[in-house]
Image (cartoon, rainbow, N blue to C red; front, side, top):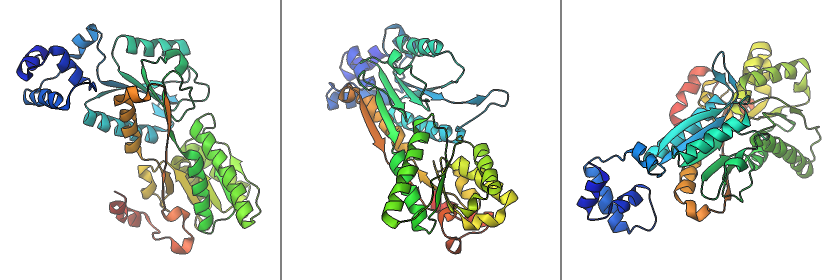
Length: 366
């Protein structure tokens, strides 16, 4: 079954079949549904290779993660965040009839090579849209690939939208303020911040939100403490190192509430305290970001500011499928949810004290 036969059965032209497949808005709904019913009945799948030869872009989303790989071990920073977001994008792509092409951009890669590769993917019609995730402040190649005709979406990075680039952000600044206020409301009044990668927008906004929260709490409640930021990375190792400094410098005498730049920092921090100063765990409040799967398996279970990965994925495909509405570029902020678990509760209100109890909490989380 080919597109000519589909068109004949539907009583339309072959170009109309093509427009239906690519979700053109000018096709009447009745005609569109008739074509789709016949496509479904005969299990028709367009030939992507022949489409590319005719200059027709397939419904393929190119997802590019900028990430740090340890090439010998093939481990990378932010792998949990990457996989959660990628899974959400793949599932939404399947629902919308798209295919996902996944690639990584490494820090050591030459910018010209990155630009040439992405331009070639667009020009050869291998992708219809490019989504960039995790770009650092020094990644400035987007203007070199952006045109008003290309579908380009950038997550968590400030980019000039004048060439039609669409930007999606987590509202990390406000979320950091909410996280600090949550710790304060639970009795943890002297707050410090275990920061993440400051060259990433999320790391910068979470740090700035921490400082703003400190000023707000001082002004509203008259508390007196010196803000303190441990500059680190979005990694378990960074959290573990922060834990060592916390113990060795007796920072627990000055701070009792800790906002982590991400959950993995919190996991590393708790691991260090459990190994070297377990008596401190019940005396501090802790909250992270990202709502990692591991959060409910550690003790105490980790509170977090949770991004809605499915919501991010839905926005990506809304922007892609409604390109004409956002052709001039747009910036969208997405709010996060606060999920309270034991780590941010006062010790006498913590519900579980062992790993088995955390397992019993799984059903309530999913």
